[in-house]
Image (cartoon, rainbow, N blue to C red):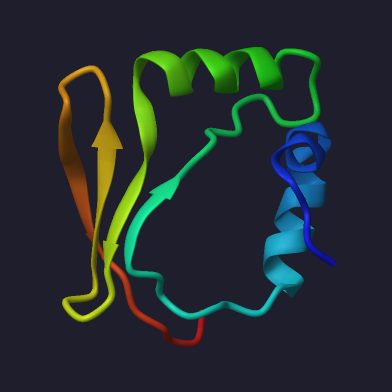
Length: 91
């Protein structure tokens, strides 16, 4: 079952943990991906906080699957930052 952002924002931390623990990993994407920060999951504040963060700070990620790298898109500075390596492996 696919979930949309509204459904994920309503889930508790335990529900999110269970969902991500039980879900298979997909392929590493290529290019820009929009994102939504889930803060205070399952509370009435989650959507407001996510909207604020998306408007003023974090915008999503840029993936480079060939290099195994992702960069977070930070609106405040207008740049890509917080670089991480991405790869598929057992967790």
